[in-house]
Image (cartoon, rainbow, N blue to C red):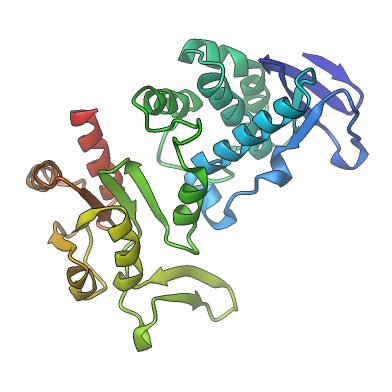
Length: 308
């Protein structure tokens, strides 16, 4: 840790530093480092950031690519990730550097947590929540990095050439394209529920009375084209569908109804049916929710706990 005027340098690992800038306007880069600006180079989808966190796997992939590119161009230069003093900017650096330590420096969880401890101290000294919102989920940085380490160990988050496709993940995960995420490669996908749209449209933006644009809705036909490419054989409904299943069935994708009323957790019989469906089908399944808090995530987590 080295404080100098408008900036604070924190060494993390493998010649990677974080430069915390108090006032961005008065900060100027020097030639001794290769700089990556986390705040501006990797913006998040603002409408979802407060709910789901500040960084996704595709952000990490872009950061890793930038680090590798800088190292290839100037191997003797350290890499400096610049962040502002706000908590949301620092938490991006925490996740990015912890992930870098695990993925590219091959450290274990304890070493990775030790690397980012100075940054964690910066967050704890700031009274505001990094997501600027209340959450009913207690998800710690260590949980995120432990999940990434597990994914790396079993080959799900392999950022080497031919491994994890960050561009595809970013494209499909964007709410303007599909709002779809492959959770278990080749087996389990979670997506937002489709809707029947007027005049045969495959997508439609919701425009509120005050002019704000809401979430983009997609038709079953839009999703069917994507799901076929991912070898999806069945769509599991965890909420009351707002669409006719014909669009999926025409594409050779079965539709399974596991809907249940109310906001309670999934009952045992639903859990058993879901696991049975996933195990019987040789291909992938896609799940969309809405019936209670986190049904899709709960079902996915149970499948992963049993099989991985």
